[in-house]
Amino acid sequence: MPMTAIILAAGEGTRMKSRHPKVMHKLLDRPLVSWVTRAAREAGAERIIVVVGHGADEVRAHLANENDVECVEQTERLGTGHATRVALEATGVCSGPVVILNGDLPLVSPETVRAFAESVGTGKHAAAILTMTPPDPFGYGRVELAADGTVARIVEQRDCTAEQSAGLLECNAGCYAFDGALLASHIAEIGNDNAQHEYYLPDMVEILRGHGHATTIVHCDDYREALGVNSRVQLAELSALARDAINTRLMEQGVTMLDPATTWIGPDVTVGRDTVLLPMTMLWGATTVGEECVLGPNTRLTNCTVADNVSLEETVGVDVTIEKDVTCGPRAYLRGGAHVLEGAHVGTHVEIKNSTIGRGSKVPHLSYIGDCTMGAGVNIGGGSITCNYDGVHKNRTTIGDNVFVGSDTMMVAPVTIGDGALVGASSCVVKDVPADALYLERADQRIVEGYASRRLERLKKGDA
Ligand code: UD1
Ligand code: CA
Image 1 (spheres, rainbow, N blue to C red):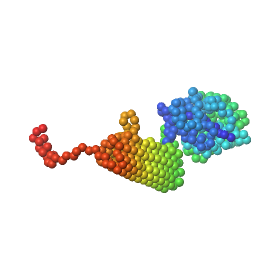
Image 2: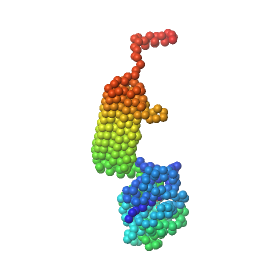
Image 3: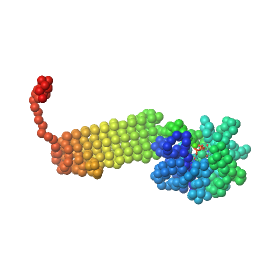
Image 4: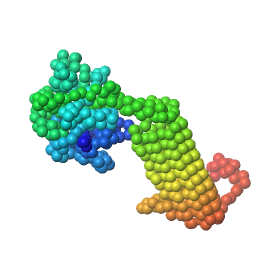
């Protein structure tokens, strides 16, 4: 039966003390809401419906990148039960398993969501809730079990008596599965007679029970998977948990980390065997790293593709492709559309943008290479720059194979330097250079013997 996922993300998240909606706060490399849509997607949800409200424009704009997600707006925040009702009414969902996930439940696994959805439906349970027993249950809805082991009701922290608060340790994680037909026919029965005057989704359990339909609990053995984010302190705690889980998985797959506590990797990143990650390395987005690489210290890559045996020391890369046997850094900055081919070297204080650096070519020191196509075996002298911007357009520089560019050369684009050409140090290249030619632009040199001391004496005597 195709599963529908509804993600509740309309709340303000007052405890975050933020201008931004809570679900837009990032855990590692992505907003909280995207952890939850990812779990729903990987669990096989056919429809993913996100209820937006507070800061709706910001959440919608972000979710525009996820084209399998539908947004529904809850204009008044009247509680999680109300949010669910709004979603059902706007989308017409009224059958199949419906999984409802709090938008602030980032670490829930796709396996849990899937197992969960499969437990409800005709001939199975009417509903299931994910529960846990965290070390500090304060703030969570508490699950009261009936004598037969099914759920009697869920009591919110604010509505708990002192006895319930101390005695009911099983907590509601904010992940529910309902038989869609039952949910749709009884959702309007949720009331708001409680401490916050809100429509609570957990009340659905008691309502279904009144109609003779039992709710089962699915206990999450590792409570950490089911923790919610309500404050920045919890956000930091969950960030560390997510980091540790990802790093442990990668180390088990054959990646070395000198200091896992300062190595931060997003959930979609892959790293090959025998690659070594040094401290303060951050790998985000859709980055893939090959085998036998050494990254860091202080290397940050976002959406990069790195082949085998690459060394990136103190390197920042965004949207770039690096082929095998390349070395970069310390202090290299590679951005949008840089493609560094096999065996090339990008050195210290070098920035590369939207350029191809050919096989075995070297840009070792203090250079900016932008909008350039560079051949193989090129050497770019220290301090050389492609002047790619005329104030209006970005222009291309084309450098052939085996070109030698002397230090401090300005290449004023659009310009082409042919194969095997030689450019003298400190030239400003404004004309195309034919293959095998010398290009030199230099004022005449003069040497005046004994000038320096004569000048000094003149100055001391007061002569001009
Ligand atoms: C909720 C549960 C509680 C559970 C806990 C787990 C209710 C009433 N309580 O409490 O039993 O233990 O999660 O973390 O559901 N939201 C909306 N619209 C609203 C209100 C909230 O979309 O009108 C969204 C929020 O953006 C959030 C989620 O629903 O992502 C949960 O809301 P939150 O206020 O965080 O609920 P808790 O107090 O944590
Ligand atoms: Ca919460």
